[in-house]
Image 1 (cartoon, rainbow, N blue to C red):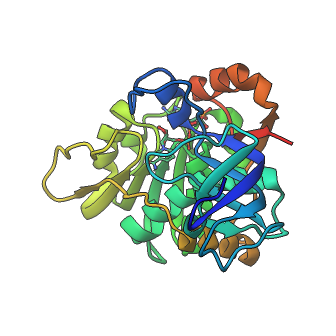
Image 2: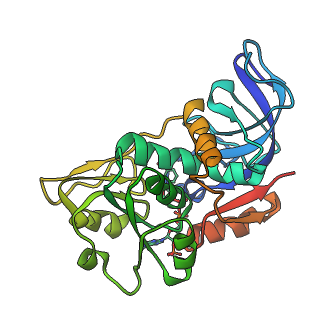
Image 3: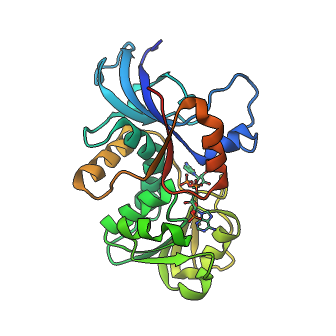
Amino acid sequence: MATSGEVVVDIVAASVNGADWKVREGKSNPLSRFPHILGRDFSGVVSAVGKGVRDLRVGDEVFGVCDVGQEGAYAEKIAIKAAIVAKKTDRLSHVDAAALALAGLTAICAIEDTLKVKAGETILIQGGAGGVASFAVQLAKHLGARVITTASASNHDYLRKIGADEIIDYNAVDFTKVVRDCDAAFDTVGGDVAQRSFTVLRAGGRAAFIASGAQAPKPDRSDVVALRPSVGRDRQHLERIVALVALGAVRPLEITCYQLSEAVAAHKVSESRHFRGKLVFQVR
Ligand SMILES: NC(=O)c1ccc[n+]([C@@H]2O[C@H](COP(=O)([O-])OP(=O)(O)OC[C@H]3O[C@@H](n4cnc5c(N)ncnc54)[C@H](OP(=O)(O)O)[C@@H]3O)[C@@H](O)[C@H]2O)c1
């Protein structure tokens, strides 16, 4: 049911995010109530509209990211605040839109809002083949930056196609030995990779982290800044995804599709952290 200000969306596709298996394992946001439905982003069709919602109608194709603290996108229907969903563009299938929702929102918050990447700057993006980083590579290129990224060798062709200027095989080369004087770094890998990312920055450089928990790691030097992007929910950022797709700046991510009944298999791949792009449930 759509309460005041909400819409009900009949979900066509929902994506798998790293947070999903972390929540399932009890590693983040420990749950006190069960059953719990995982899933943070989706694309689908509005099937009911609550009181006060004037900008969306039954039949509209929309995509979105659940509100902070809300989950439940691995489902056939979801009720969600109308203000935090956006109309899907015909240029994207529901599968593509679900794949881009949280990944795109996070990349925009990191690259544009937090790091404020500018034309002519050089950025190192760690973990280039992942969902957030694949979007970030394309966005940073669109903004006019030179993009260096890390990935295993099997993902280099993919990263070249989406615009990376330099790709480091992190299994063969220590990035701290070959990258220096970057204006910015964006880490999507976490752990030791995050901590060592400070070494590639020029004096005054800035680094953003999304795989190190709620806080950025503490820099081991005093002439750089460490930032944790704040990833809120609003329609404006989703519309920015749509605009970037319309401009041709960002293309749909590489996707592996699953049925909802294959959630165990999808989580095993997500947990392995070695795949390209996004894993998406085709719900209907
Ligand atoms: N709002 C938020 O704060 C927010 C939102 C979304 C995601 N996240 C977090 O951001 C992180 C990234 O998520 P994601 O979904 O984009 O990707 P992911 O599924 O966590 O990572 C997959 C990618 O990581 C790469 N990778 C693994 N180890 C690597 C290493 N040592 N060096 C370079 N690349 C490496 C893999 O590439 P190879 O196969 O080439 O190794 C693979 O393409 C996760 O921790 C997730 O929880 C946070």
